[in-house]
Length: 478
Image (cartoon, rainbow, N blue to C red; front, top):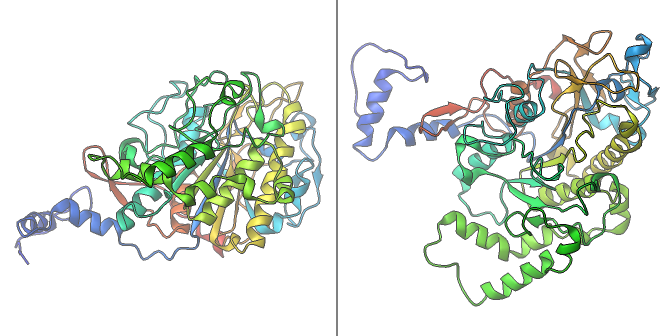
């Protein structure tokens, strides 16, 4: 080995000047510095606790005071209209609109002390999905940008591609039922957070698309037909703005698959395709992909248990995908009507639609994974990007409040039936064991056996830590 003598001085990346010179010299012998750093970054002695993650993002911000942090003794203007009900966790007060969730509370842990200071939907959504504050100021915009931090799922995709290449018939990272913001009004609010950002488009998720019947339709709140629930792959689906009525005149997704499979049996991927185009071609023609995305293969009674609404069927699809080998599945419960979980106006939608659909689907997902023996190896995270203000308006609407909110973690070895952290008397601030989005990201990486100090190349090809300042909440497993 090339040896450099002299005093040791460290660079900002933690490597000594001597090590960098040695690495540069090694490049003369076929080992470059980027390869050396890459080899180092993928070495990890973290023992994985889970094989996969299902990340349920309830976009808009569910209220902690109506879900897992009720304050029945608080003043009338704070405690809220919902009463606590019995559950399987002794120290947990759970809202009356979550009766099914209450019956599986022994399977999940409630973290009551999620907290951050980005009191904005786009920035908060980016923060919770990446573990990094968005670079755009609060209120500064909606659209994802190449400067965004890579999502946790994209980092999982990156790590898997480094180890396995593109050999898997399915990607490691998928998003269902739609890219966040696609069903909002006219789709003019694409949201950041789910993408690969500066890590590169090759690590973006494979995303499905489900159309709604009209601009005012909310498929999360009603039963959907099988014709609607075709989970088309983005890029194979109809153009934006094409409604279900127009879509009915076109080929179904499964018919598209069949046509492409027959065509591919007579031809190979076109010359000049790169590895990623070839993978996309393989996905279109893969029997495994076709089967995984065909939700009609599930028993009718199980589909009923999840709920035939879009969130329920998307949770069921997530279970199908992790069962097929996808490592990270994000399920978006999006804000379709401009408010939804963002319940400024009143609590009517929360009571009549939002909590009942979540309650049905979440409890069914936990039970289904458990019955199949998959819960032990699947970490299920359910969270909003923020909470709601302790003080409500006269109609029990609550405004943005990122300083404190609740989330749940189930499976993947997490000890269920307990509460982590403590909030103050008004559910406004954490007073014990605060957990930041950086901590959440580090915890998810830790669960998957990925070192949270992993460094990946940024746009300038400089090794960059995937988490800055976060630490895994290892107490969740003990």
